[in-house]
Length: 86
Image (tube, rainbow, N blue to C red; front, top):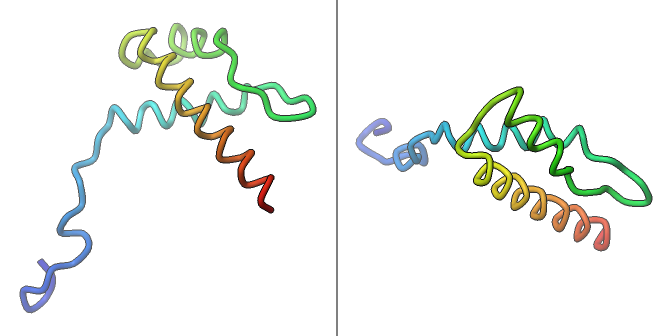
């Protein structure tokens, strides 16, 4: 609680989720491995498997790939939308 009993935005802050942090961190690191041609390509499945097998095992391999692919699709869609609009 803030001074004089008034609430602040941090009063309703959600608990930090380390598992989500781990996936976001892995996605950020894997983003550097994507190939580029005329446009930015998705992160390769082989890169995801390599990361999971050699750098950090987060959840099961299947779940890891699905989550990274979903993050990647959102990233590429957002990037494409921003390029189209600006």
